[in-house]
Image (cartoon, rainbow, N blue to C red):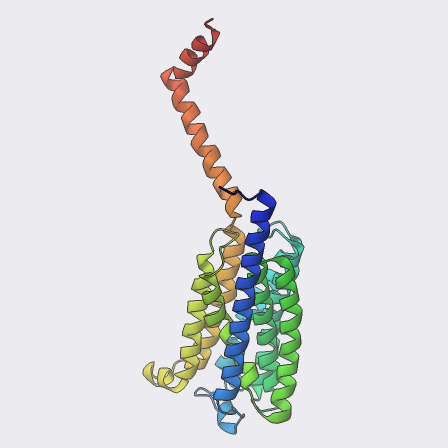
Length: 299
């Protein structure tokens, strides 16, 4: 019976992992091509900028749509500072630090860009509302890949996705087609949950990725039902404003995850240490440790 050495087993496992990753990226690229060729062109129209609630309070146009975006600034700035400070978030690699820092910087930029757009919604300002979100989603996906797949792939994906974000925005402005920009909306609600089932987590509290994906999906439904929600609550707050408040829960949930998570190996080691401590305590109380010592002293 032939036996394989340990290095050969490692090489075989690495080869299987590379094949699996290649199939995943190939499938993702084919899905992107299908979306581009099977879906019609999505141009901007004046109707896109007509929100249900366009009331003016205290001289601020679209007041609630503007005010509800500022929680992004608070969460983004605090997360960026804490991320660079380095002692609160459980981050193992330097690549993760830069990915999460860019994510929180993008979240803070969403507040400025979206507020600027909602003060006077038009085709020229919409890019300032869309581009920061695309950068935040790109860095978020990169952090996920660093955690689940590897640092090299995650960082290379960060550079590629940020470049694609700028190219997509130029494509949208040149050809009046927002399909490429809208594909970035699929990252938190479809791509990340799908890959969560394929790759094992390196940290605990990984369920927060799914919580954030669910909240993001709810926010998109609120945006689609903007006018219906506005009429249902007797014109108090629109679905678009609720989308802002719901979307800010995504970085909040991920911040909670970063604060409380641990590497799975450390968690297992802590559990084993605690379990061993209880066994030693039991032996000491029962006197079994003394009996074992006497037994060892016997010739």
